[in-house]
Length: 373
Image (cartoon, rainbow, N blue to C red; front, top):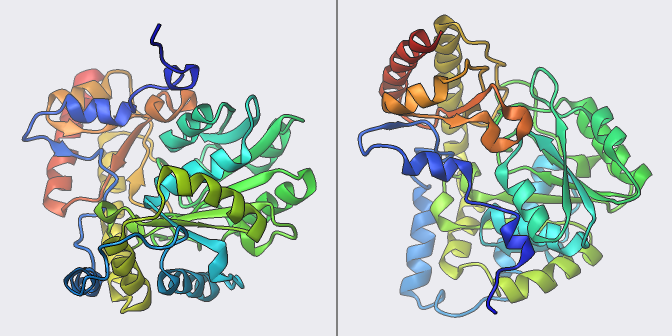
């Protein structure tokens, strides 16, 4: 008899997508985690030139084009001071595939993976698809992940824990001391730290630091992507890096599920990484201004809002019925419980949209708030 795998039956369609599907065509969408900037011109042009020259018609090597992997290695040497060998980089179909192969390569049936709660929806689902058991850890009041809580959650069955700073859905940026602690925990407990750094460049307060800077063992694997760094979500180009032995195992998964990342996207990402970087500063400053507008607007409504230090999300505490009331009035926001049990009582808003729409949305959310309190 035809049946479905137990692993796939353990997951469901993302709660974020369910909200989108319920939205009207004219709704203001504050649920989408996608920068509203165009991809850099020089990245687009590099893809066009590769396509027109016939250089993007065939498979690349499984790990990706050598020039792309060198550009990725140089980016991390420059930004994190990491002495990264390009051979220890795998170009992937977005950060999503990078997370997938990192978890698949390191998690056995029944292994535990410690994840932030609320946290990015893929951490829970990908752990279950690998046959593992997610172990959600609630965040602090400022929505950062507490290293002590991670360490307390470690058992003999723990294979890995996930760190995400700046964070989705919270926008929180972990302080330097916490990042160093995550590296210590990975080293001392001999568990893998998967560091999801796809929002690395969007930091308003503090600074982005990576656990791999502080690790004394090879127990850190880093996931990153051109999607949020360069506003290239549709290009589906991410990467994962770590020690040679870890990359070799992740490559075994990658070569069967993907073979290689899209060739045109690889040419585009190499140009984005190696070319002018002025777009980054422009995007960050724009998101900072929008963050301030949204936080102030939500506080004026009467909501409690942990101020995000990065990314382009804010996660206010909201009253019962607020999310549905906003959606009914044409403003799409995502209920916090879509990101984990401890997200209940919160909502996630993305401010990756134009200022006029944000001002209109805040006004409507004020009306929704008045309707439910």
